[in-house]
Image (cartoon, rainbow, N blue to C red; front, side, top):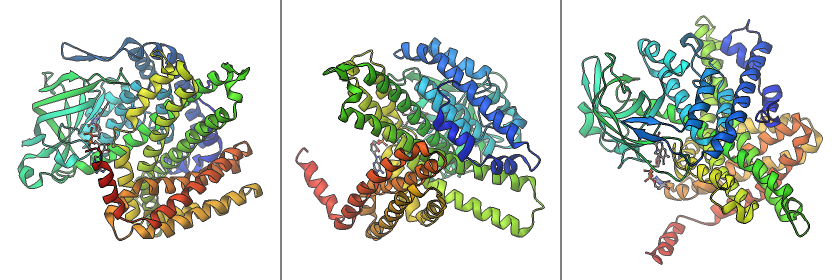
Length: 575
Ligand SMILES: Cc1cc2nc3c(=O)[nH]c(=O)nc-3n(C[C@H](O)[C@H](O)[C@H](O)COP(=O)(O)OP(=O)(O)OC[C@H]3O[C@@H](n4cnc5c(N)ncnc54)[C@H](O)[C@@H]3O)c2cc1C
């Protein structure tokens, strides 16, 4: 078994994920669930084998950047080779439906493949991740004709995709987008500039642009934005006014091309409703967010392996440093946070999968009774409420953890960690961007707060209570009680945030972390219930995080919006 396909993944593949429910809903009652699961295992083994094989080459050539040669983007040879291997194995457009030539893998499997790719080469992951993300949006929102035109080419890896949102004045605030789309009969024409576009050399750009006819009225808002497929080549084979102006030099993910783009009256095809592009783009971004969370987990895993190996062989004071209490503690906290990130991420993607399966089932059975339909819709809506909260939380947790875990891996290596050739140093440089793109950590916790404000916690906590009540093993009961107490503390403390939005925003990070603590606590307890070897991990998480949660709850209750003014006064000391 390749080491990239480890117990933390197999636990879900073999025991915790309900594949019976997923496959019968997604593919029909007569589907052979066992062979579907075996096929999934086969795909993951293939991905793991390829990623293990390319890891050394990709690490050795980490500094080599993507280059712009005569207007075309060229990625370094090691990255191209790794991409080609994945493409040959059909692993570059993971979620494309079978009818368009894809594997239609469950999001869980795609996410694990993205983790594996990130562990081997975080820059390559951005290219593959966008490939599936762009295809997924076309699949969901484009007309049948456009799907048939583009999706088979995505599935075969013939074309790649990019997601073009950011402009110089529109980063976190996409309401500031000024790229303009003018209707021209069946097509539209796009004019404007985009920056920081990953995979800007791709053939198929998904561009968010402001509709010309409502341009002035909608300025400064996300209304009036539409989403377009804008290829670099027109249907008649001529160039389409889509130019890569330059590639940026970066501190990490060097092989991932980050482009400044220009669109000059470029032909484009709207997908989704006119003026509703932001909603469609949010889907793509949510997809990309769980993808970037996977990237965080993969990079952190790579750093963790390096740190453990080094700590076992490096001797100081006559013993391996791994034997020092402080190092033992640090290494175990690193593992705990990777596993915590993974737990939250798997919960999120499995729920997304369940909803996808319900949608497929409803589509296949238009003749279901009203009662059956209503019940499935009710479950789907509850899951949707949960995933709208879990997605930003999963991205926040996995990427912030990757940042500190890779930094800690440098610490474990001492002075060697700071050398230019240090692998963990490179992994740290790669990890930083995960906390910035697809919405910064601050934007993720603001999104989470918005969902909490709409009442998401009621459903999320209700499900947690059911899970905690379902635990079978006696030794887990005291831990479950602590998580229940943590949930109650969040409910109490969040009352202090109800009446002042500025104060709620100020507290959105600790609040998000408190919510993460109980969700991950519950998931790790479920893991420990299935596999007693994971009980120490669950205990370590729950004992530590519930104490932190109590401290934060008290801070939220005892403080007020006046803290904002104090923040301002403190900053003025430097201003
Ligand atoms: C390597 C790389 C690849 C990228 N790839 C793509 C891509 O493929 N497609 C694409 O469209 N874009 C891409 N981006 C752009 C990326 O998504 C943006 O950089 C990111 O959304 C942040 O926007 P910004 O850089 O303008 O920062 P700003 O929005 O200016 O933010 C600066 C700081 O202010 C904080 N901030 C902003 N607003 C708030 C708020 N309301 N509350 C609290 N804090 C706030 C942010 O958290 C951040 O810390 C990429 C960027 C990089 C560096």
